Length: 196
Image (tube, rainbow, N blue to C red):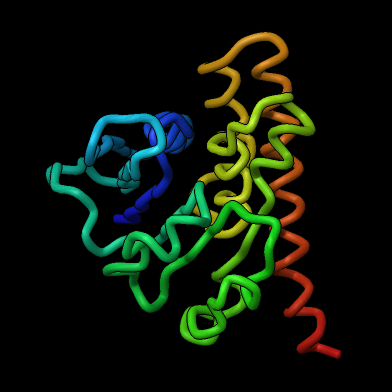
């Protein structure tokens, strides 16, 4: 079972992000579940969404305590909430930011998890460029597909097109695709450097 925890703030679409990921997994014939947990229900309050993906029926409905991947929609949460709690040592970390991992002070995580498992992507900026709105959730799922390989980009795009219509769907598809390619190039760059 692959378990994902999505951290963000109220109003950022954390719930939608987890749901879209589960729909992408279903599109590939896998089992999935998505659900949120809320602290205080106000705009801007920290919100956590969970998603589980498996090839067998999923029986547990508990919050994800030991995630295989953590997606952070708002980098300001890095120093306010323990977003890394329980993250598997072989896990993945995806952060929505235009800042580098060094600027975020996450060198230890890069060392612990490896440079091909910890990436940043400017999802909000990509959403603004392609969608005209600062909604990073669908964009981060394109990056998630590139980082983990748990779902294919085509399945993420299909989930987006099922959820949204018209220019909103087209903008999210373009932004998710751009994020996918950005993360693939980040992962492939260190691998190329090691072979040279």
